[in-house]
Length: 379
Image 1 (cartoon, one colour):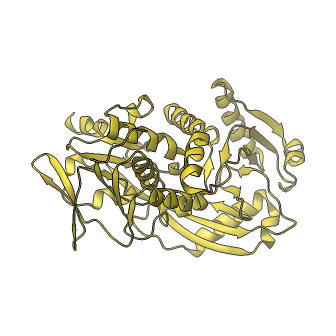
Image 2 (cartoon, rainbow, N blue to C red):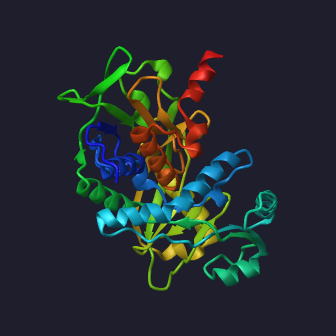
Image 3 (cartoon, one colour):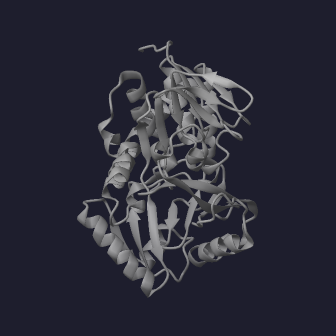
């Protein structure tokens, strides 16, 4: 394995993207220090549902993002194999598929359009009546009118994945500084020199900004070089599955998703709110999720509530990730992953590690470079 001990790299942000990139860089021999304002994996990564579902997620104008998601999904087995070597234990890569279901005529019309679109894309997809959907998943409501089955989607326990990444990163020689907020990126003319926490200064050859929606809050970077990334609040409910409740696949409707996890919990999510940096869970958010979840899987009514929390998705101006070298020498971005940070972790971290250590830009990531926003601003 090629070693890069001369590279001293600082990573700002300890979510799934920062941890994945830091681990792979340390694995290659780089001297990596990761700064996290709270605890690693406790922000957007913690409140994610862990869906690896590019085929269910794809919108009518998101073909490139679907391909990025498909590529990252295909990289997950290799990603987890390497992670197991360094961490010892990894979560299950659950190729459970996604069932998109509806409960009335309007839902059926929506599902028909979604089915036609996916069929034209050549995806493996099946449209079925409600009775057939209930045979496949008995916990679905008797009111289910129709469903789409997408067998190639998967999921993973994102919280367990974070713990494995943290262990692997440290085992590979990485340093994690939690409860350490980076306030400023320092530079000398057009070259990044490190980061400042207000109490200490860290000198680095390279700095990777994986700070999610807080990226734009960092000082020291010219405003016209910062990618436009904003917070989008999402509230998510975690229920404890009982012995009689055994959901086996991801269930989605036009309003909600339900994702059973390997630890016996069920994630029900998620709201999407333009609330700035507000992360307070609300009674209205919980009611919305429970109502929509109960509509498609009524038996959630009796499940104990384990957790109700909120987080901030990092959404870029075009809702696509921002990955790669900036216009400032030594500064890299890995942010803007919006709803799909867990899905995009392998393609982002493999590609960015290659770019940093070998100077090769991944073809997978070429369309998501920070420069696309610089060009827009000049025009």
